[in-house]
Length: 80
Image (cartoon, rainbow, N blue to C red):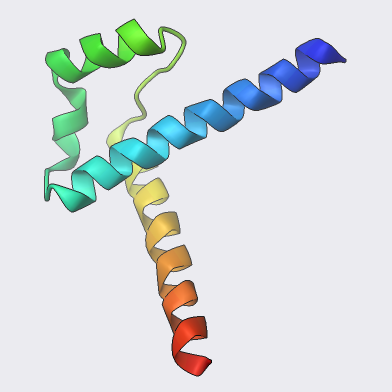
């Protein structure tokens, strides 16, 4: 059971890293290719060797999910 819980935490951390990469792209107005650079790969590998940077399509899908969530949150705030 503990290994299953640890895997869930690892998946959660991987998603957090992906979310941070998407934020990096959006906030700094970088192209998706920015996360494919060797320097960033080395940094990520140092801090989280098990993390694999997603491809362009997967990063774009994550970007769209974050955008949709933010848009829905803003809609709810405006309603209230």
